[in-house]
Length: 285
Image (cartoon, rainbow, N blue to C red; front, side):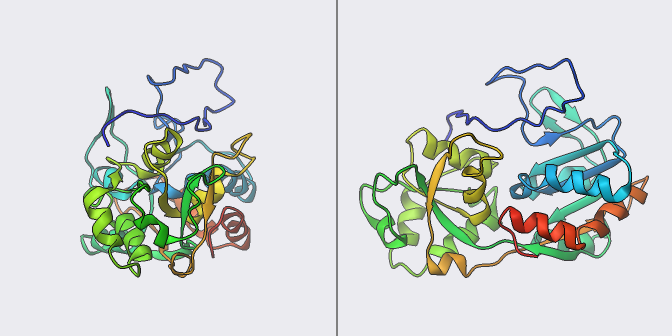
């Protein structure tokens, strides 16, 4: 998959900023939110949590008793890893050099960072609710389960096995009980380049793929009227997919400064309020 495809993603523009540049296809960055120059709290997180964060931050500000400037990055962990290591990250022509205070990600990503002394001990705070099959609205190919993905007329899209290893393995595991399906995926499937939570839905939206295994909370997001006036997609549940549970952890970055707000945010993730917000968007405390 090498084409540049765009979906009508909701924009987190910051209503307090009057002057805005909005040009679809140019000068538009979806997974970097806020002002890195003014931020009192800087967070890097597993990209597939992005739909939760606006509501989570509003509740956090209320618990804190004040609104603070926050900059947060919602990318696959390998993409934001340079920032944790003290390296710059280039976004097109923009070079970002900012030290995160909080990092959120899966255990297999967090463990090596902890062993290298880059972060404090990670703590699990939430998990997802498995995998479903996302299809175009109306499910025009009549897909009812993983077995249908073997059909010759079904085109599959999923995350990249090299740049997003964790999600790729999860999706493949969910489909592994269907004989021959793993081989078809490895042979024929369209894959994302770097950010599957943006790229794979676009493949379905533009008719390049008929189905994609995606986390359940993505499927809810695409149909949530809080973000989209009309649902983008439908989805099909299947037992093996919904039995999968991936954990997400949080830790403080050791070399970060101004850690008071970071500790408060880390602790807030374990409150009843935060758990209820995550549940609202398809996660499990």
